Image (cartoon, rainbow, N blue to C red; front, side, top):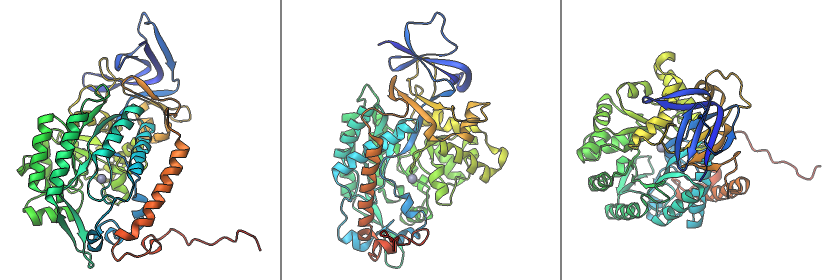
Length: 483
Ligand SMILES: [Zn+2]
């Protein structure tokens, strides 16, 4: 295979443990690796050349909580409280019993749709996350076999594993939320996930790796936690678990176990390296010290937090304590650039203008994610690293003096032009081979409307759709025939 030389106005390289900026630099890609970064090699090897001009060659972004379904945030945006709006299962739905709101074909399509969207946003390594509200119980091995096929075909670097759980939350008619359990089902889900992990880990020349996804901490039984930890630590696979994200979670864990969620994890031997924790908004100093000392990682998802009126207090504090912090998109659009921008803004709202700089956010989306996964071959462009490269076009951008600061002010995911993963150009001029973006978007919208129609089934009191969701302005009926 012939090497490829990429050149651009800006290259984010790496030297002595930190990113560095090269102006008018290059990246030489050979096979799946970066062979050289910096000035043009002399003599120039025999290679293909691509000049991106006014652009940034950036390390690909690492998304530790990568949106992988049809996000329903828009339904909750102006409709609250969530427990009255189909965000918590009522007893009557549990009695029904719950059913899959999408067909297996639809679920397979959604992974393809989502993975393509991640690539379009310059995300080269992804750990998918999806909501279990719309599922009969957990995710299935069958859909993750489809997901592995899709990731392999599109060229995405992915850590995959079906989410499983021993419990869920239900809401009573008076709004009280409590936990319900089916531990045998959760443990069976874990055994399925472990068999899947052993089967797929290392697929696609190592691009596909296993991960474990026990759902939210408040409904994990001690057996599920300790067994997950034993299997995952033995394999060296990451575990992702939503944690410290709501008052309801803190209350449920305290009522059931008498401790904070992080202490509960630690008590069950479940807090350690590669244990990835979105969102951390309700962490105490003691929780943060436990996370740091265990070598676990925080997954920061500033966009979804801000939409719900919340933010991390605060990113500078977590970083100052030496805690590993990576980034997650977790919501639509899966735009890592806007998440970095919002992460900067919310950190400054929390701690003041001078508390953090742009490069700290750029680090979390690249080096922080790599460290969380225990890897030193991704998240950086340096000789010997994986050739995972996101090309950000600055051709329509003003005020470029420094590439990272310009990204933080002027860019969005839509400026990502090309993406390289494992040395393969998986997107060129925003085209991903085999993906028809317009057709897929229409198909996703149709599936989403099918889900909206089913909302009354799982909403408290089962009101019609028109009563669950309140539109922005009054919808005026148009006279189509003229009169
Ligand atoms: Zn989340």
